[in-house]
Length: 458
Image 1 (tube, rainbow, N blue to C red):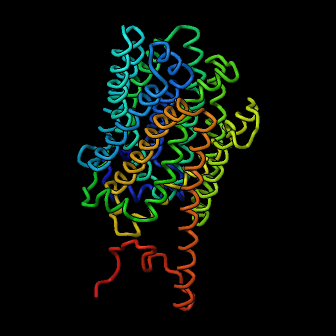
Image 2 (cartoon, one colour):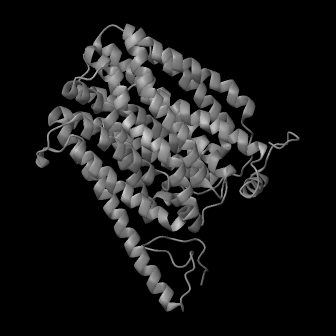
Image 3 (tube, rainbow, N blue to C red):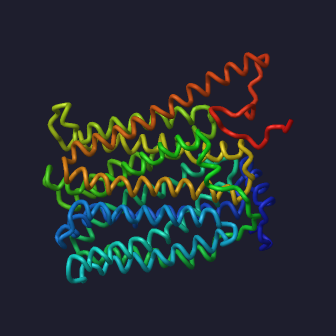
């Protein structure tokens, strides 16, 4: 929205965003940043608050480790479905309405979740956990999908920098959630953490209604299937899956492991989880700037970050085959490695997927941004479902140490496959360059089976 109150169209929003890269930010850009930052912070603090005490509370209610993992995982499964559907129809629904309505739904669900300790019986408790978490997931899918798309829309030339800077607020949510939830739980009981956060989310609704601009856009005929079948996109999505599954694994299993192995209280378990969120929060802005200033470095940031994540999980337990004794300092250090590598791998993924989509003929507009944002959220949600579900089952069947090692092996596999792809891509481009007298056009013949709608017809 400009200073005269006019509603921005898709074209003028892009022009305004592009001009903002060389001058001070416009009013529209500032308001969008504030709105998206509030969504990032509120979504992550509501998600991370469960880690220090909910598994313990659910266990007291009679839920098994596997069921606890499924409760965490169902959030991600419903977030997956919501991200795919809402990302596809973001233009028809309206990005602003989607964001605000998602926050409203999530605020109510957060308060209701805090009342579940009053529910009698194990079965009733578990069923209501699944229902409320599922609805909450759809609400946050709406808010986060629209926020990602709007960020890329308003800042098309600095996507990684903006997303990396906004991840400060995601990191703050991750940082404050566990200790905040753990301390409130210790001081006031189960209900208060959820009631406080639910009221905070509700206040975000009128706040975003006031500051967030409206956006007009044209629907596109592109689909998720066409996007995900690009080999490069598919491999990047596999890497995104390993990142989110690792975080989901930690949410569902680390608190019980730390409580039993190191005799930590819920408050200290919350502080332990800072080992992941704090490095991620601090490194994301720098990694975003590096990704935008040096686009060729993005792919190797993803590969190296994935390898570092895998090593971190191998040594988190540590894995029994290494015959290293579990120590608190080692676990904290490995959580720090995982947190930093999460930023290395995660920040470049969105701009890389978007660039691949545009190179293969997708429309340059809010509709494509919604597809990319929805797919990112969907793949992230698959990992967040797999991580706690598989992690809870493997921890119950084997041990936390073996489950963490398997999680690390999946991350190493994804990074290895993506690295091989980039090496083959580089070889093909070098051959193409030598065959054309040294020219290296970016949109030349597709690589490794990628299709291109920009190729001339014969």
